[in-house]
Image 1 (cartoon, helix red, strand yellow):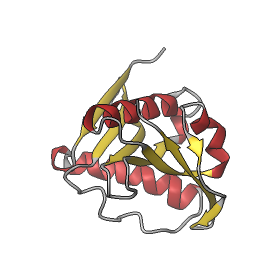
Image 2: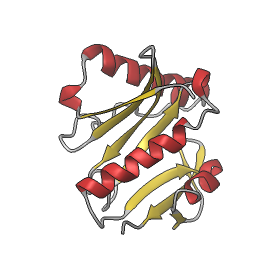
Image 3: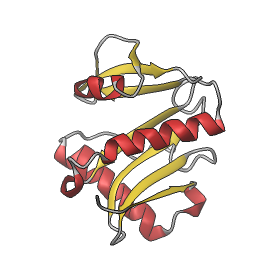
Length: 154
């Protein structure tokens, strides 16, 4: 198994190069690969209570990323999003690790507050495997079918 280095940072802890790298990954996958023009820079990255979670390989290459949003930023509860794995690193289970990190960060920082996400519908089974439940009908967001899901915190 390859060595993964996890980084958890607030916006003011990111370097300019690190921020550029994670924004580039997000745009490469969500805007270019998924052909989905949407407002990538939504102001939520800079919020003082947002966490940026990155998985880096031993050579420091950014392999996967997500952001965890405090209650009230996107939903009444905790949320996370921009879950992304670089094409070269897919199929290695990094997304499972990202979700585990997001759930742990949520539990530690906002105990007993549910986690609510707007998931791409084709990932429903993936999120169900992490304890999420579907709580909405499928809806269109930027041309991609989504579904709202919640995970209750113990």
